Length: 549
Image 1 (cartoon, one colour):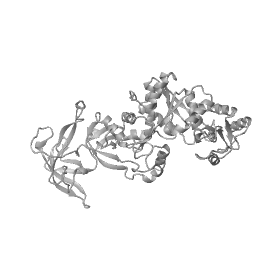
Image 2 (image 1 turned 30 degrees about the vertical axis):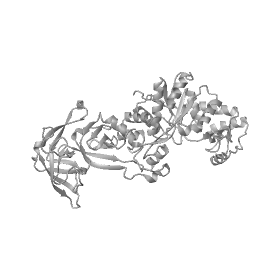
Image 3 (image 1 turned 30 degrees about the horizontal axis):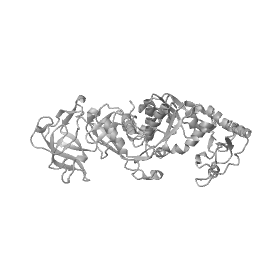
Image 4 (image 1 turned 135 degrees about the vertical axis):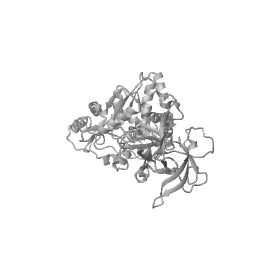
């Protein structure tokens, strides 16, 4: 896909200046997810920024897994991230793991000890937090801060050799306990964890903290611009301190941008994992999830997601983006290339009483009225058809133009029909309509007699095939805060309907997409579709009140 990130933004301007001043010769960026969950739509924005800017300036981008915490990471997440990045259309230069650099990181940590800039600390996590102080008061130095270099070398070596229990000791940088930036108050840079690692097995039992590992990884790889989200802005002085004091040859430049927040969802892998673990959704790829896997399974296209990320732009201030904006780009992408089809999601049987029993008529209807090259498709019409329950009312309000007793409507691509009788079950539910048709009103025949104001769709019972339709609403109720999101789950976020679709859908495979007349854009669900039954996910409705500014 051709980059369209050429509109002015502050990161692009920084890169232009750095190239102009010959600070860097080649732009190298990286996309560095931690493999502790699936990628979500917020990561798509970061992907677009890193890959597109590097592409524009003839550079390259690495896909790097920041796998420094074996307690939370898994090869399942590694595989899913690679699949998502490929699906979105990005091409990385190298796949790298932070764990590939564990030996170098250990050496650099030892290097800081020898410089007198790090020490082994025996305080517990709670004690370290207490000693750190707050924004109004300076921190208190650890009683272990002034251990000799020799003692620190010995203790850190023994930590590496597995002589201590988890949490018994940590390695901390020795910076400034009175700094106004809390991140500079002797941060922990190594901890003990006797946990097998997905990449290095049981080789290591000490692991670097993210704030120590990340700048070293960037410097080792020769990253020129380390682009990250705004919450790391306060970490930048620490990032620069580690690069400087570890005397790294390459000096990356960290730049922060506002993360993407989307209405009616949460943007945290920890919170998304809670939705999976609590069985609120049926996996990371549930179509209601804001994960890339969820959007893919729902039926979104890579183009729609990338166009959305380009449109929201790059800013320094956090903001909330309406989910309908993402749907807007989905419609823009699918409308010109999606075949049309008819389906009845909540069926009512209709008997055409004056149509010949056993007769099946072939009709032809356009696949996409906006693109004649897509041609036409064959549909059938017979005595028994289905219409949607939403297209009939017993006691209609004024200006209701669909079907009711005594009213006449056009069937899309077929004839006028008039409702004469309503059949109900013992509970009073409408189960069947008896109608008559006018054979002179066949669609395309040039009939110019009386007019009708309503057109509804139908499927023929003689040829239509059973299908399940899964209709989605936002998973998180509007106005919910991140802290109480589990208490504000929308219990109506999924509605499953059993209906029928034209036989033109026969043989459809996972991810095949259609515009279903009047219902919206649908995609075949690859998880639940079987040889015997098609299952469709509604990606988005046909229209929205949303207007792109």
